[in-house]
Length: 185
Image (cartoon, rainbow, N blue to C red; front, side, top):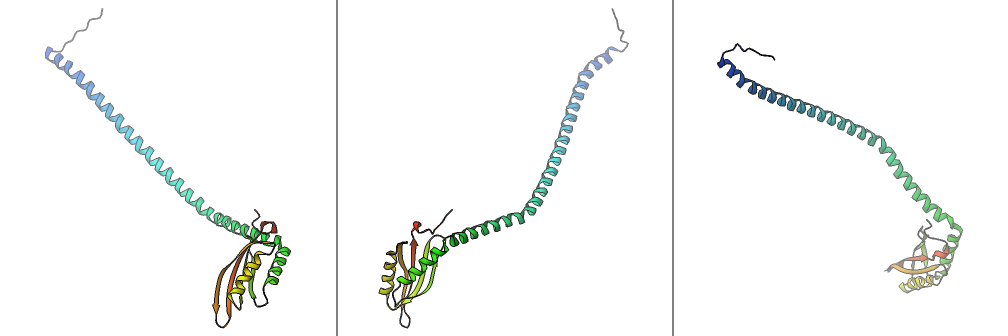
């Protein structure tokens, strides 16, 4: 057996028994406080690193967006040219046929009517304008257009009577799809 001899006075021994638990508690509190402070510093450091990385990514994104701007504009221009090309191809696909339609429409006009504008657009609409001596002659011409085999409907969209020039009119007609004109997509 091991015996220890404590040479301290009883008063000093009681004081040491009281100090040991207090010292241990204080050391534990200091250790916990040190861990909390270390965690706060680590969290702040991590937050700063994330912010720096976020700023770097934003800068890269802005640079790439700026670099892509001409490509986006070019893409929009290409789409515009494609639409124009489709319209041109549609208009040119039945060009001889459309010329014949226009000649037939011109022949259908009464001798007193003078056509000043005649066109077929990509959607298969026929627009024409002109002048004549009376409103009735313009209305008769619009009805006569409906009798043509390649027109499904026509209407007199505008007509004004002028004292010096007579009647100025506009007619809009739709070509039949079987006529080979219209939107081919």
